Amino acid sequence: MDGRPDGPVQHRIGRLASLMAAFFAVVALRLAWLQILERPFLLERSRRQQYAREEVPGVRGTITDRYGRVLAESVATESVFCSPSLVKPGRRAALAATLARTLGLDAAALRRRLVRGRPFWVVRRARVQAVQALEAGRFPSLSFQAETRRVYPQGDLACHVLGYCDVDGRGLDGVELSYQRVLGGRSGEREVLRDAAGRRVAGQQVWLRRPVDGSLLKVGAVQMTL
Image (cartoon, rainbow, N blue to C red; front, side, top):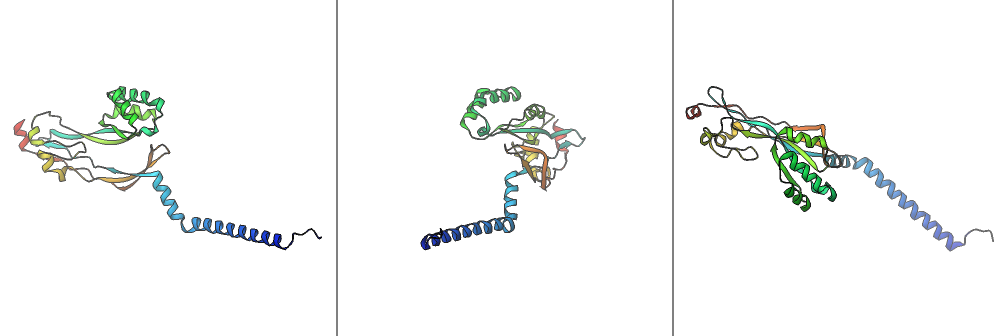
């Protein structure tokens, strides 16, 4: 005997080696396919997972009387959104207490919403100063969106003429509704980079379409009602 495998054994070894060679060839071809042909698609999909598109409304135009006195204007605010899935069960009460204390909300109601687990707006159009304290705390479950809020410096005077806006800044009555096309401007769109926790990375954004602010509107008839 010369120590070599007999015929059937040698045949099986050869067949196994061929199968292994074919397997590695398929793997190599697949890697080449991913690297060369599908690379642009994979890069684009990865980018979309890191970037999120946001609609950015233009600032609604100011309404003044013929003397330049401001009757309606939009002021900067911040809205806070919460993703309860990112809050550990043991931290729910503490987060609810922090939100309630900072924003003047009900802690018990916030705890119930955190337990339900569904994403929700904590507050819409809050004072920027109040929200800045939350942003500094770097809570993974919270995200923030800059918005504006419509205010009427003259109070209830001529409110029946000026009308009012909904929570998204669209005119619903009076001058606000009649001149929606003039005051409303046009929304823009941007892509913002988010980290693994879904938080926006400051300064990392790409404008796809910049917003256009609404126009100044001067009304003369309102002056007579003041």
